[in-house]
Structure formats: C-alpha cells, structure tokens
Length: 310
Image 1: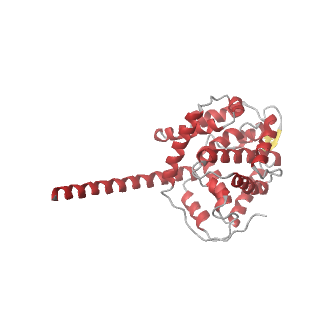
Image 2: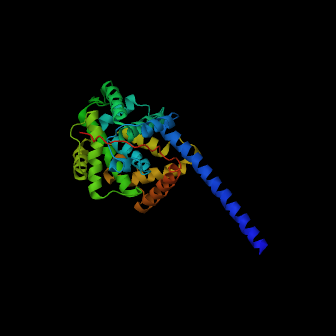
Image 3: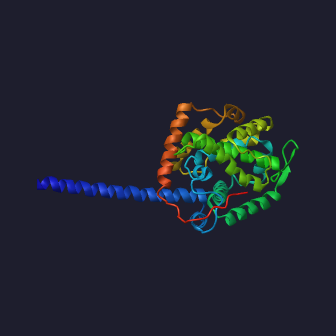
C-alpha cells in the first residue's frame, strides 16, 4: 500500500513538472510569436493600446473586436495580401514604395499595430494612427508599367484595399474562427470595420455582407494577374523569411489562405488550389495551435466607456 502511494506521488510530481514545462514553453512561443508579428516594441504598444484608460469606439463584445482578435486573422491577413495584389494600381504602389521584400516583418508590425490601434485602442490613439496613415498616403503616387497614374489616397483604391481586406478577414473567421459570427453579427462587422476606411478617405464603403459581395464583384473587371501580383504570391507562398521550425505552421496557414480564395483569384495569380478538405484541415490545425499559444499572453484589462463612431 505504501509503495502504491509513493508511486502515485511520484507520478503526480512528474505530471506537474511536465505541465510546468509545457506552460513555460507555451509562454516562450507566445512571446516569440508576438514579437515577430508586432515588432520589438510590440509589448509596449500592446500595453498602451489595450491598457490605456479612455473611450473606445467599440464595446468588448463587438463583432469587429471578436474577428480581429482571433487567430483566424493569420489566414485572413495572408488571403488579404494575395487578393489585394490583383488590382494593378495599389500593387504598383506597393512594388514602388513598400518594403515588403526588404523588410516584410517591419511592414507586418506596422500593419498589425494599426489594426490594433483602430480596433482596440482609445479613440485618441485610433485617430492619431489614422492621421499618420493619411499623411503617408498623401505622399505616395506614381505610374504603372503601362502608364496608368495612381495615388495611395485615391478613394477608389482605398475602397478596394478595404473590401479585399474585410472580405478576407470575414471569410477566414467564418472558416476558422473560434466563435463564428451569426448573419446579423457579420453585417455588424462589415459596418463597424467601414468606419476606419471612411476616415482613411474611402467613400463607397459597404455596410452589409451583401454589400461587401457586391463591391467585390464590381471590382472584378479591374483585377489582373500582373507580374507584380504573381511575384507577391511567390514571395508569400514559396519564399517566406522564416526559420525552418516555423515553416510548417506557415505553410498550413498559407494553404488555408489559398484554399479560401475564390477560384478566379487563384487563376489570376497562377497558383494551384489545394483540395478543400486539405486546406480546411490545415487551417483548423494551425489556427488552433496559434490560438493556444497566443492565449498564454493575457491582455491588459481596463474598464472603458464606449463612444460609438458617428
């Protein structure tokens, strides 16, 4: 009897040691993942965005907060980049003025910080972030290889970037989100996300899922599989600047992103479509793993009043 109790005690100790080791590894992975996505100053920005007192645009349970806090955003973000690249004018701006090849992680950090500031930050922080982007856009312009002029602050192009982004975030959340939205919540998500787009300068911003689908369809004649777009697809899908240990998870996310694109988009990009069962399975596995890792870093919790956007 004593031997049995001793063996059970030893087994309990081993289990506890293993649990502590797993949690320590989970914490290290969470910090490494967050620093990669948000940059070296990401922890300070995270504390400021989520922990500063002050009014926010959206309440805690708002669909826009639920979607853009979920691990499905990793799939949605990749999908958005692939889809956005199909419009030759914004793609020319990216090719001419962006450091997506020379500094892809810096670009990712700035984009993720902007999304966090405008979704979770105080109204003051969100408005400052939008002002910075508007000033940046005002200085970006040029011409495509075939002589068409573009400007980053063109309302029509801003609408395209927004439509492709929100269609991608919503699609990924419907497929891989932890708590998918109802139909009414999905409409609310589209309406809430449109506020930032309007402040950036877009004009015809959809406010429902049906309006989002209609806007995407209206852009179809303008989309092309240009060499620049296909170069972006190759870079994202075949040449990601990642350590070897991170590539299997990234490949799973990328497969899920490609599988969630409409067939006409993969045709324009000249990339093979994975089997639906494969892309769904890999997407669920990868987002589930990233969600488990990310949950090891709880967010600062502050009470805040809500000042809904006008």
